[in-house]
Every structure is written in C-alpha cells, then in structure tokens.
Length: 168
Image 1 (spheres, one colour):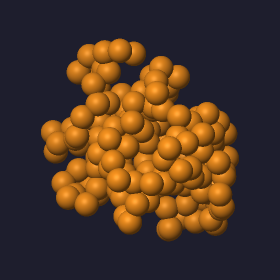
Image 2: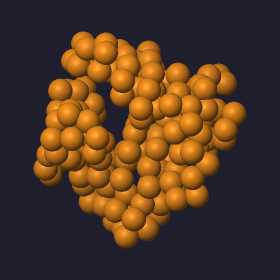
Image 3: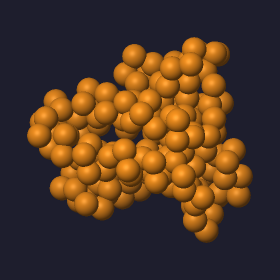
C-alpha cells in the first residue's frame, strides 16, 4: 500500500478515525466479548469527546493513515521517560495485512525518537493482534486483569527494546 499517507490527526479527522475504531472493535471484539460489552466500551473509551481531547493533546500522538483520502487506520501513543506506550493501533479489517500497521508504528517511533522501549496492552483473546506484534519483535512481558485500566478484559502486556522492533 504505497499510497498510504501517515500524518498527525486534526479535529477534522475525528469522525473518520472514530469510524475506524468502531468498525475495528465491532469486527474484532463482538465475537469475543459480545455486542453489549463492545458497545459499552466504544461509548466510554471512544466517545467523540474523548477522541477530540486525544487529537488535541500536546502530550500524545494521534496519527492517522489515509488511503486515497479515506482513513484506514490510526495510532494513539505517548512517551514517558524513554518508554513509548502504544495506547491504540487500529487498522480497518479490509486494510489489514498491507503494511499500514507497520507504517503507523514507524510514525510513532519517528515522533518519539528518544524512546528506548515500546510497550502496549492487547486483549489476550485477540490472537491476530498478538501475532502482528510478535512479528514486529514484541514479546509478552506481563499481563493485567484490566485492559485499559477500567475494564474486566484481561490483557497481555507486550514490549520490546526499540532497537529490536522490526517495522521496516
């Protein structure tokens, strides 16, 4: 997907980025957690107000991936004391497997050049995402009973030293 453009999001990207989040969540997690739980999390975590605040944050990166002008993915990340935390990295199901996720990860790394390590949480039932992150060189380094700090979804913590991350 060489025509993919990765850039910092603006408030004009809010609905398109939110659509990526919603479609990805519904496709991935309804079969795992059921519709009611997914809709509850979408409404709490991914409300227009939350997304707008994240896009406008000076302390975090909200990047979008577009293909032919359509938003196909996004990354939300922040760095603290050398640790780059990927809070979200979503790619539309139809665009998965084409390198968009790698490009979004590269964008986050480029935004935080001093980060020494990379970490994220992933739902332990999301085998496709776990395999993607392992392909990038990330390894399971722990677990948490509460993905996102306010859910009852168990998550794996995956991490890697920056120099060992395989994105290119």
